[in-house]
Amino acid sequence: MGSWGRLLLAPVLLLAGCTATGAPATETTPATPATPAAGTPTGCGARVEEGPLPDWSDAGFSGDTRMPHVLGAKGEIVAVLFGHPLAVGRTEGPNNKILWVDRPAATSSPDPSASTTLVITATLDGTTTRVTREVAGGPGPSIIDVPRAGCWHLELRWSGRTDTMDLVYIAA
Image 1 (cartoon, rainbow, N blue to C red):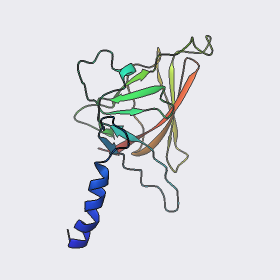
Image 2 (cartoon, helix red, strand yellow; image 1 turned 45 degrees about the vertical axis):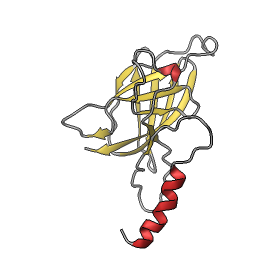
Image 3 (cartoon, helix red, strand yellow; image 1 turned 180 degrees about the vertical axis):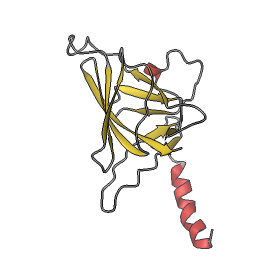
Image 4 (cartoon, one colour; image 1 turned 30 degrees about the vertical axis):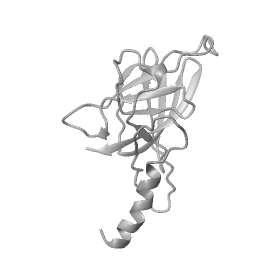
């Protein structure tokens, strides 16, 4: 790296170590956005957290367990990634296991007649490619595979509740 590169990198590294609050910082890994077709905007907001799970989602884990996870945009659900990074066409290693944990509801379900099945509608960023996956019985353990690598925007529905998140799948 040239002297200009080191000069520009130093302030970035200094700012990265600062936090606005007294809370301990958690490491995050920004997701790599999908490579869209020329001229297609990309908006992948996936951030894989590497720190401790939210308190409401850590039942069954011991101590200060640090698992890769993605929190839903509304904070209603977390995807704990056992197969991180998620991959398309993986033939060896871990599969795309995701443990879905929903935040305990403050009140009973908004719609008691709503299905408990977790319905995931995933759309590949910058395309019209859309798939639907279901986790019977609601949030819990699952294997979620998608047909192509890239950033997938997920709409999540279960028990009358909703949330959204982005997940990135890489090519294996």
